[in-house]
Image: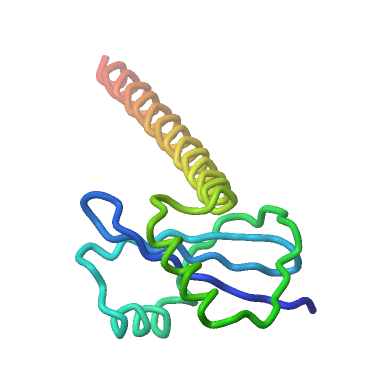
Length: 139
């Protein structure tokens, strides 16, 4: 079993606060998007992770370059966090993963809708046929 790591990015996407969960496993990245609404406090985010992480629907995995974990200088980490806060948006790979998930959900929704429409048309046809038979029985 390979090494797994995760990352959470919370940013303001007009008009809501959004969180992007990124999960790195076996050289693949999958992402999940969560809308918080009002700006979440640190303890609210932590509580959300504890209670709802297992229920998140992650996108299909997308291959990425190996994630190398090395010990980093705390000052460098703080600067990197500040730089990330300045950036608007999310990582490109995360966007690809979320877009893939969105397209799959759209496809599932279209298939389900088409099946419902066909079932309804079949049902209406059966009702019309039954009505025709009932009309002719009396004569």
